Image (cartoon, rainbow, N blue to C red; front, side, top):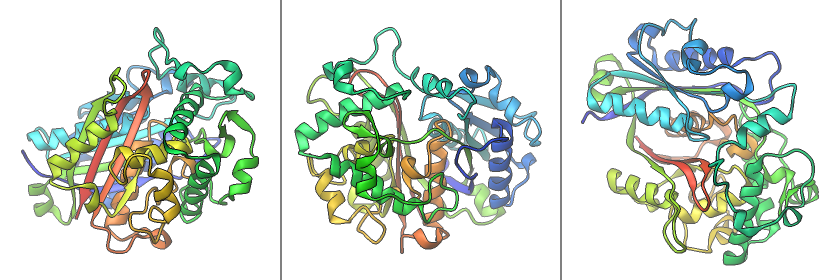
Length: 398
């Protein structure tokens, strides 16, 4: 199997961006990723286009990638459309890596793009809420509507995250203040990211004073709706040698689907992480910087434990230590995470990887992690009853 290198990476600004379309966002990310790789469209042999909700937002179905990339010079080559909830872009990246590993392509392109803002604000929330088994919806741990304290339109996933938060608090002793502190940390990181949706930062007091979305989650503990795109160019080691530097190595990229796991069984994130560590011959102690899927603030604490960054029930302690902040032992979500950078769901997986590529290449400016040589991304999407539906864990290194 050919070793996979990352030759180029780029991201658009994330946010609620009037006047931008899925096409213009994808075009910008592709143009900049190819420029970063010093390649032309004709150098790309396969394209994998990740998007989750465009069909429900605009009605564009079936050929989303071909439509979005129509004027990029890429058409004529295989364009594979990838839809896998919030893990759509990670899945596109994995498929691009597989194309190179297998020898089917020397150069492949993974794109993640999403246009979620809409004049009808309920439409994107409803679209996001379809990333469950509609015939057997999650039981939400037996919580009732009264338990959830609904407050206006919201994504169904905030009820999912709220149920997870209640269970996690019971097991770990985590408090609302702990959840707020995740948002504060990621807000500080996002303030240093010129592409982030939110760059003003927040205080614990502001988070705890924001309105309840689904108890115990408050507005500023929840990732926002937004627009954006990111793209990654991958190539074989042999191509990199012939055509210039592509020093970032893909050490592992593991995809898993969740399961209807029994109580006590490991979650899909843990299984994907274990497989990635084994494949890369690395462990959590080797990771210098990480991007994790903080769709809601409690999820970051939960994922610390699932990835083995700390022991069971020790997520709040790890956060409070400062180890996961810039300047700490293993900074997490240096780009601001979903809470601050934003969460255009089909773009997030590639956005995480762009952040990590920038970190490994030493071009993250004020949020640079000194000496970063090994990076981890965890991205998850959809939900069954007690596990994410789609999970990806990626390890990169110099």
